[in-house]
Image (cartoon, rainbow, N blue to C red):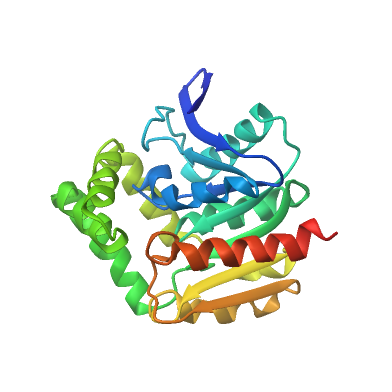
Length: 256
């Protein structure tokens, strides 16, 4: 575990392995623990897994804009790792941060990977997920943490570790993450994304999969639909998830 200390607190992250750097961006509340199974990729790449402010072991204060704060934190991590660029991999609402960074700093993004990604909240089912998440966060955050962990974990030990990590999250930051990504909309800017891009969805991910059509305007695009899968690819289908990413990076970046 590495820490970046600065005026507003501490940014905590893990960095393991060598080679092309891949920085993973978590959804609201979950922190880096959601990418536990991606540590296996360190044999091929340099995997970087932050707890963004208000999550896990990070204590940094959030400014008026959470998204802008997280873009700054990505910059701090890249600088601390002495990297000029990286592959960004955003999961679920974490994809909003990944897309925003790519649009703002295209020269710093080697490739963009989105798992269960969307450029705006479009489907009624995704809208409902946001409303339910925000309601539970206000009324019973422990219940929300348990339900999220239950949907992601195959084993009791991993479920418990996810819950423990989520309980470290600052509830106001967790809520702000929901609120800002709920309102986020980069549909009209998608054509500006020129780097190699990979979309991954579970075939049964009914609340995220319909968003794939928005990305047709992105030229350098690959898509992978994982059969018999829902939204939670990084944990529930991690072998396929890791293999698809490895194949994509090897073909789109390593070969060039």
